Image (cartoon, rainbow, N blue to C red; front, side, top):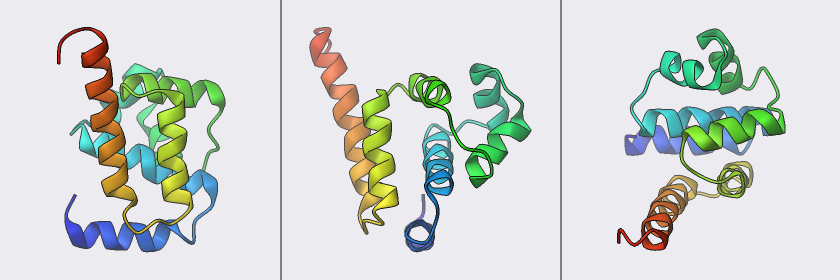
Length: 116
């Protein structure tokens, strides 16, 4: 993401509801993977329109959906929740910290399987 987009995103994060921040996080993770809402929807088993509703914070996530999104993004539910906390707390460096969580998660899994 471009730096000016990050500033706009983080300003809006601090004034959003939990559902809206969860949606922003899903949107950021999806864009980080450079995939469309259609691809994500196909994996989760819902429509692209429903993905859009989640990303806009119009629909609350269930724990089951959080598990499915986490699986798709190759992170644990706890990592998803840590990232969501960073968004919800309005931390100015949330996106940087999220990148670090993703990289650490990838590194830890590769170390565990002897690929690092």
